[in-house]
Image (cartoon, rainbow, N blue to C red):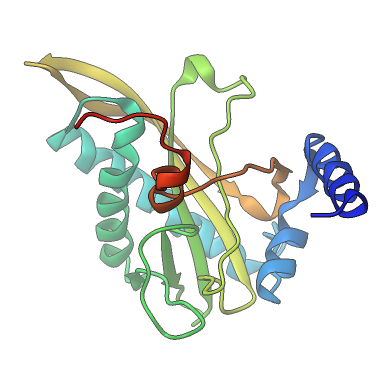
Length: 218
């Protein structure tokens, strides 16, 4: 690498240390996928009806979660289990929940969003499941993640909803906690602001390459 290239790279890296803040979720989604994140319209009868159904979904999910409980070691593990309850509740109200399909037609469970569902007006909607602790709800701790992908799960203009449950520890069973739900929130993610923080990464092949190993057990 020559000096000019090295200096240019150092300049780029120094800029990367300054995270971008307050980015529009809608702009990010459209930039990554080419599709718009439709804002919820409080004057649109169809949108209002969908919100009413999502409220019912939240209530039913909460009831079912509290009847069964979620046994996990840590609070951040509860979200995956909650997704199953939400899908069942969506299906109960005939909202046709399924794992989102990528632009290549493959169903993909990892990454944003968790669920896609068809409302009674034959519109596709996206839904992300979250949990929160009321003690931390006003903190700036990162709780929403969205990563670019060459096979993104956004394939249409659509509403992007969030459904989030306030979880608490009901009791402890051996070394695990039984989590239940106190409350819930329905979110319009199109209004969300995002921050972009760069990171560098590597892999095992590079990390354990012979040329960088100084010593190892024989």
